[in-house]
Image (cartoon, rainbow, N blue to C red; front, side, top):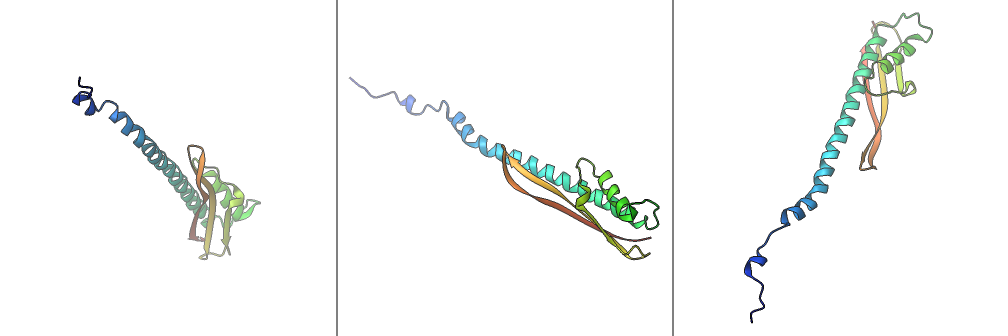
Length: 136
């Protein structure tokens, strides 16, 4: 009697693809969600940069504003108002200038971010943008 299994059973590869897919799937998911999170943070940075640029332009032309909050208050409102999809805290916006014609006015803002994959925070910090223009 021959108790050897048939040769075809040694070469049977049923399920091999499923095992390989199960090994590779977590890596692909991690890569995909990492790219998505990076895209969200990059979009937030673009919104922050655009808001600071709009605030700097507002500051450059607001030297003689009649608003009680003064040029700095008007600038902070412009940054917060043009932030797009993000919500910037007015306390995170700084405006520095002498408010003399031709002098520079600098507007700087920060926005917190965090990157989380599958509920675990992998990175966090503050996005920061600064723009300088001349007071008109």
